[in-house]
Length: 82
Image 1 (cartoon, rainbow, N blue to C red):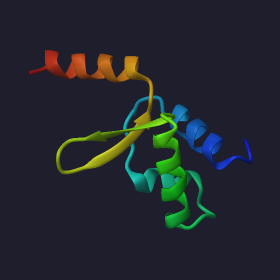
Image 2 (tube, rainbow, N blue to C red):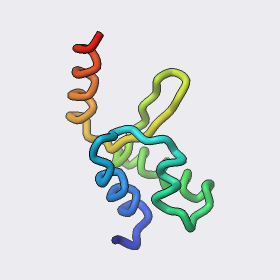
Image 3 (cartoon, rainbow, N blue to C red):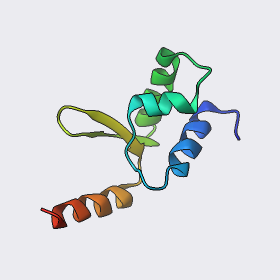
Image 4 (tube, one colour):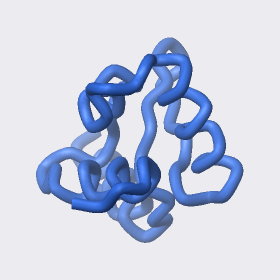
Protein backbone atom coordinates (compact mmCIF):
# COMPACT_ATOMS: atom_id res chain seq x y z
CA UNK A 1 0.00 0.00 0.00
CA UNK A 2 1.17 3.55 -0.73
CA UNK A 3 2.52 5.97 1.85
CA UNK A 4 0.71 8.96 0.31
CA UNK A 5 -2.62 9.52 2.13
CA UNK A 6 -4.31 10.60 -1.10
CA UNK A 7 -3.28 7.39 -2.83
CA UNK A 8 -4.44 5.36 0.18
CA UNK A 9 -7.89 6.97 -0.07
CA UNK A 10 -8.08 6.29 -3.82
CA UNK A 11 -7.06 2.65 -3.36
CA UNK A 12 -9.57 2.30 -0.51
CA UNK A 13 -12.39 3.64 -2.69
CA UNK A 14 -11.38 1.48 -5.64
CA UNK A 15 -11.42 -1.61 -3.43
CA UNK A 16 -15.11 -1.05 -2.59
CA UNK A 17 -16.54 -2.57 -5.76
CA UNK A 18 -20.25 -2.55 -4.96
CA UNK A 19 -20.37 0.95 -3.60
CA UNK A 20 -19.46 4.19 -5.39
CA UNK A 21 -20.45 6.78 -2.78
CA UNK A 22 -18.95 6.91 0.70
CA UNK A 23 -19.55 8.86 3.88
CA UNK A 24 -16.71 10.92 5.34
CA UNK A 25 -16.46 8.41 8.21
CA UNK A 26 -15.78 5.68 5.63
CA UNK A 27 -12.84 7.70 4.32
CA UNK A 28 -11.52 8.11 7.87
CA UNK A 29 -11.35 4.31 8.11
CA UNK A 30 -8.83 4.33 5.26
CA UNK A 31 -6.51 6.46 7.42
CA UNK A 32 -7.14 5.23 10.96
CA UNK A 33 -3.97 6.76 12.41
CA UNK A 34 -4.87 10.30 11.34
CA UNK A 35 -7.13 12.78 13.10
CA UNK A 36 -10.47 13.49 11.42
CA UNK A 37 -9.51 17.13 10.88
CA UNK A 38 -6.39 16.09 8.95
CA UNK A 39 -8.37 13.60 6.85
CA UNK A 40 -10.91 16.34 6.09
CA UNK A 41 -8.12 18.61 4.81
CA UNK A 42 -6.81 15.85 2.55
CA UNK A 43 -10.29 15.03 1.25
CA UNK A 44 -10.99 18.70 0.51
CA UNK A 45 -7.67 18.96 -1.37
CA UNK A 46 -8.65 15.92 -3.39
CA UNK A 47 -12.02 17.50 -4.25
CA UNK A 48 -10.23 20.69 -5.34
CA UNK A 49 -7.86 18.58 -7.46
CA UNK A 50 -10.92 16.81 -8.95
CA UNK A 51 -9.73 13.41 -7.74
CA UNK A 52 -12.87 13.13 -5.59
CA UNK A 53 -16.33 14.59 -6.09
CA UNK A 54 -19.14 15.47 -3.74
CA UNK A 55 -22.50 13.79 -4.08
CA UNK A 56 -25.45 15.15 -2.17
CA UNK A 57 -28.97 13.87 -1.65
CA UNK A 58 -29.97 17.18 -0.13
CA UNK A 59 -29.57 16.02 3.44
CA UNK A 60 -26.43 13.91 3.17
CA UNK A 61 -23.09 14.64 1.53
CA UNK A 62 -21.02 11.75 0.32
CA UNK A 63 -17.77 11.43 -1.59
CA UNK A 64 -16.92 9.46 -4.69
CA UNK A 65 -14.11 9.11 -7.20
CA UNK A 66 -14.39 11.74 -9.91
CA UNK A 67 -15.24 9.24 -12.63
CA UNK A 68 -18.12 11.00 -14.38
CA UNK A 69 -18.93 7.91 -16.47
CA UNK A 70 -19.59 5.82 -13.38
CA UNK A 71 -21.86 8.48 -11.93
CA UNK A 72 -23.83 8.78 -15.19
CA UNK A 73 -24.36 5.00 -15.35
CA UNK A 74 -25.49 4.85 -11.73
CA UNK A 75 -27.92 7.76 -12.15
CA UNK A 76 -29.32 6.22 -15.34
CA UNK A 77 -29.95 2.96 -13.50
CA UNK A 78 -31.72 4.86 -10.72
CA UNK A 79 -33.96 6.65 -13.25
CA UNK A 80 -34.97 3.31 -14.80
CA UNK A 81 -36.24 2.03 -11.46
CA UNK A 82 -38.60 4.99 -10.97
